[in-house]
Image (cartoon, rainbow, N blue to C red; front, side, top):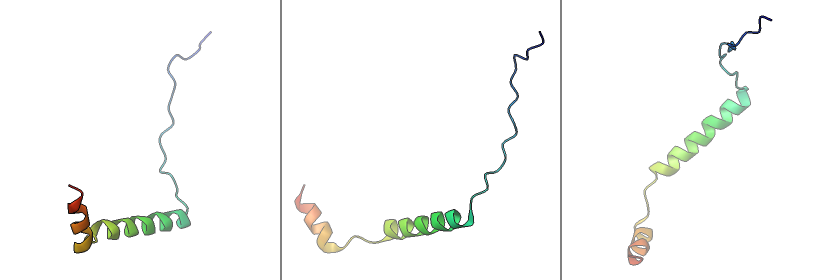
Length: 52
């Protein structure tokens, strides 16, 4: 009886992210990147070296 075997998929719309969520994501990425870029203190490297 005319059942379509192919399903149509609606076109993906860009998700609208609320402004607060976008700001929070940006702030978290910024803090993470600063942490990654931070140098490891020499005394901590010395302690880590003793573990080997």
